[in-house]
Length: 249
Image (tube, rainbow, N blue to C red; front, side, top):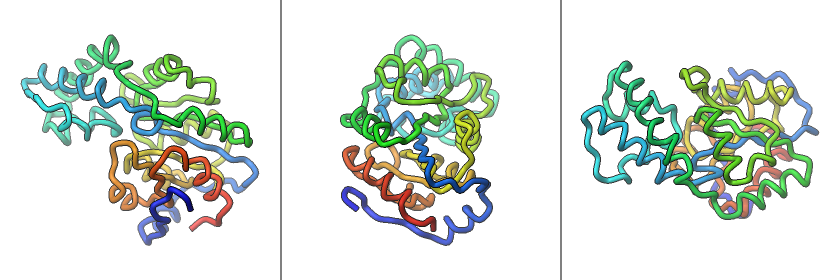
């Protein structure tokens, strides 16, 4: 497969998939769900500056923004606990501070990855139904997609709520499929750059493609059970099409 590092099958994938909620098998309905940060757009500047601002309010000084890239992708509240060592209460305060900067400035310190528009257009032209499934609050995801003129490519945009509910990726994916009125089946694919995208897909019972132009490593994605890794945006359409045409693992 052109542009694909490796196809992965593993006992971990099979064990997760066996517990997944597979409730539909109409292979004629092809659904592509996309993560936002690190998959459709590169939000590094805006997110890391927002995290820096939030940590500063908690008494944590960070000079090197590159050290804050692990915050991109996973639920933010969890990251403040796991990566900065904040308590749950302080993590919630940090999220509020993060949003102070992000809402006004960080949200558009962001760029669309080259080739994404063409990829989305190609998928839609061949009958794919597309959605966004992100851990970012839906209100922010909608603003970003509108700003970059990407919103029209997607039937649904689903993210977390501002109160912190529906922040885990399996919850987001399930809600996106409900909004699309499609059951989880082997022609549904989640595309993302971090392990939580892949794990969420497997829990729900859909296929998973990992992309390496974002913030997760090939090792992270393959370890989480990605069936395919794609190294270049220009190869994503082909990889998705070939995956739905192949039998599930």
